[in-house]
Image (cartoon, rainbow, N blue to C red):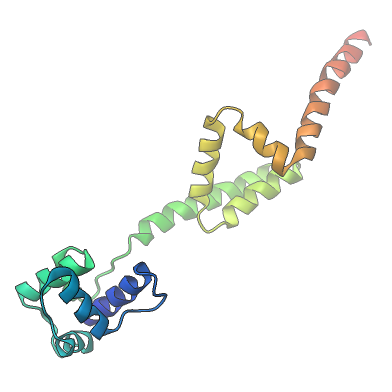
Length: 177
């Protein structure tokens, strides 16, 4: 990403953070820097940075803008050609493995339609790893599973109780035969 693109992005984020629901204008940035930091930068200088006619910043300007936008000064440079700022490749690979594992599990338990559908639903979620981490937290919280089932799936709770009652009766019946 070029420095100019980063500046546009920071103006957009600053507007969002300030509740404007839009990017801040260059002039609004100039005024805010003056009010908050007591230092000056011109709107035309910001325009030159964003347009790419000024591809590098002075140390003083970099420091001023990094303080205002609350970013590391090293962020305010153009990225080298071919540089990728996302770590998604490794994370996406892990996410793909989790999704594949869930799909395989759904296939193994296809005789249980509810479990199969649940595993597939998690695998289709955009962040299946986080869904599983959340499930772990739910299981670690005493009685939360029962409370959630009471609210979200009361029929499952009833089926579970019916199954627990019928198992001993069936076991007694089998023992008597």
